[in-house]
Length: 259
Image (cartoon, rainbow, N blue to C red; front, side):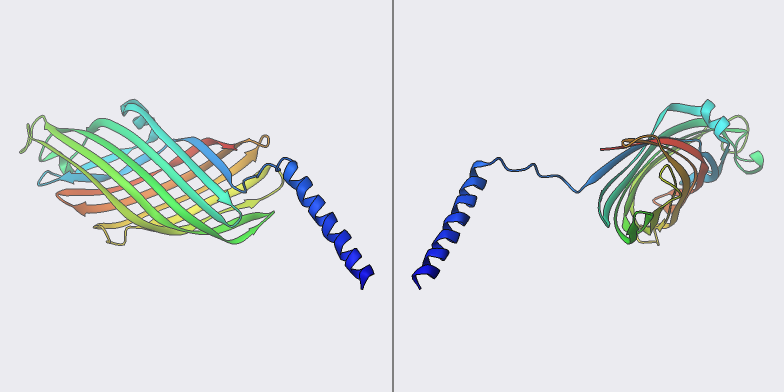
């Protein structure tokens, strides 16, 4: 019994000594499991669609990117981002642009020329969970919201029934969004990336919005990658005397910074 008590005493003394030593030693730094990505990009988007404000005639917008370069009233802002911790992720995307150009009404009956100005912004926030997650890539189901903000001004000029009239309207709203987002690694340097989103569903009077993207990424080093791809985004909104039906599409190029 005395031997056992002595052994217990020795063990307890050893544990106490180790605990005291641990208290004196500096605590190891805590490493975050989160990985963050910031991705500014340039989207050579063309526009196809129409807009009307109140009882104004419908103005048709049909621009290639080469046309839009001539009509940009200010440099556009485009940046995406992601924060990831294993299977969980938070993603965002911001677009802001202002366009100014002469557009047309059907058959030119209401006016010979329409000076159309469109300012729009979209800000998307998504939470995601990986259905598949591994060294070869990931496939995430995502859900969240996209805020839209549009300002449309139509000035009718020249001949026509409504020449000299002006129409303007601004509107901001939020759409629910769901979809898939993923990456597939081809090799250590190249990857395929993409997303497919859909939303609106008439919840906030936006009939439908959709957004699809596909790209190829190339890793230059541990912190920087390049990506090249194609994106299409559509919107159909009708409320508060504002009718918008636009498709934005075109190639893009961007950089990704990881930290």
